[in-house]
Image 1 (cartoon, rainbow, N blue to C red):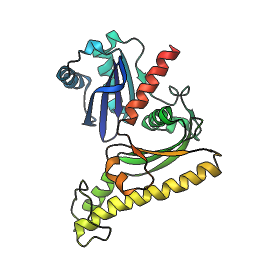
Image 2 (spheres, one colour):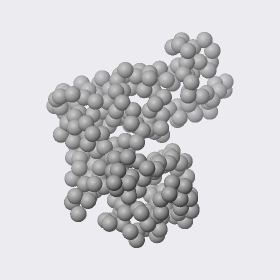
Image 3 (cartoon, helix red, strand yellow):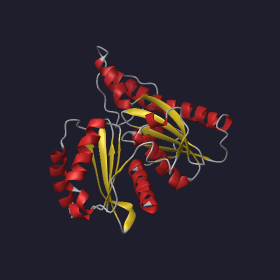
Image 4 (tube, rainbow, N blue to C red):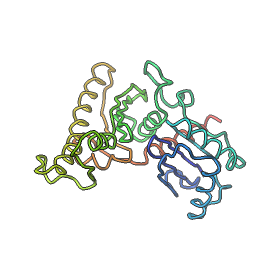
Length: 272
């Protein structure tokens, strides 16, 4: 059984894949990424969660982890080494530019700077579609990642996330309230403050996605010389909110990072 761990700035997503059902999650959880967690606190939490779905810690034979939060990565690695290492069939996989070099070619100026989650998303999406890809991850930051049909990571775009923008509007202005964007605006032109803010965030980010995606497509064809079909995939905790307001997003896959970790785990097994 594989324990897949995606540690982000705002949330940590954890999934369990059974060996006899390698493409299906038998357990998945999302938590706030509390930076002061200890290895023992993680052990207590997951002992309970595993028990709730009838899984014993001894059944975990593989671990794959991607992290953009060094302090939390340290705690997770310590937890896995202390409580889960006895039955591992191969060493724990901690994703980095060096550890994925056999799975994706990184063609950026400074490969070590690329976030582990971005590389894993690219690998997971390419493994499914084998074509030119734009992967949009709606997390604390919104990232656009460009992967060629030859599985080359070409680079991407980074911009402030939706929650950051909403927090800035309410905290840096005197009269704008916090709003819930779970329910969309009635129309583009808001006739009250709340509706105007909802429209600005949802229609605004949807239009931003379409505009950037169009420019990225043109550049990938003209500069990177990629040919063939393109596919635009969205992932991350807020992807489902923006997708209805974008004409470019073709699919929302909230578990893309976990799927990418599963792909890397299988490839590690193949090269062992």
